[in-house]
Length: 320
Image 1 (tube, rainbow, N blue to C red):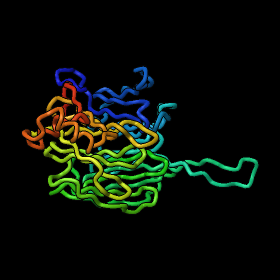
Image 2: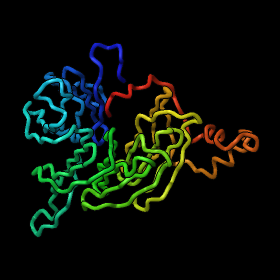
Image 3: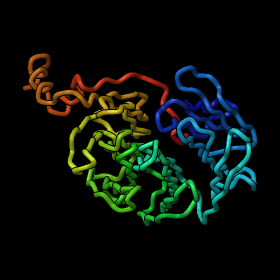
Image 4: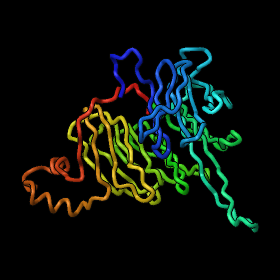
């Protein structure tokens, strides 16, 4: 998505929680687009930003400067109102902000009135630093909890925007691919998953918080675990040679997701089917391909549950 030869390269790119919109930022400012039409919805030109996070299609943005101006410090989070074009609140931190996530959870409260159910929203704001993650109530900006983490130099994290499964995933080790899954609404650790032997390179949670996908720095295997039971559900081979996984993403779904996509430094987008019957695929492969001759890793590469297309790989410097 970024073009290194461009005079105005993209510094960050991110979708909102339901993928209906996306934001990009450059050294000049940021823009918000409609995902379905590509229409420019909002733009602001007043400096470089390394983080622009949307809250669904609301007017609230969480933005972090790139530090090219004193007023746009990478250690200061600004909650920005696109309707008024003005900051709502700022939160300073001691070290650089590496990632920000927004969410909201709807609670239905019983009332003995004409209207039996009243909807209220409880939002969560997460700020990821190198060794700490802060959880706020974004309505009041009251700090709810602090998670001390292993050094997280890349700001790896995943956050599910589900109404029921509000989970946060963070690296739990610097020597292996362990993941801490934290229940953000209950403010307690849910589980820890040992997903890989090598440190993590990418994490993604499905929109309903059911599945978590991980890739290690080796980049050859992508694993999907069931969050509720911390058990492995799928294992996909991206390729036989190491490659850097830039991002993982589940297809939007109100039920169980059926597609997982991965982008990598090999110049490919890999598409994996979560609804594919593994046992059935192995029996088919023995008919369609010389499964008794080819080693297992080749069979994985020929798995019909795995498709890939070539693309111009995104620069590793672009934040997602």
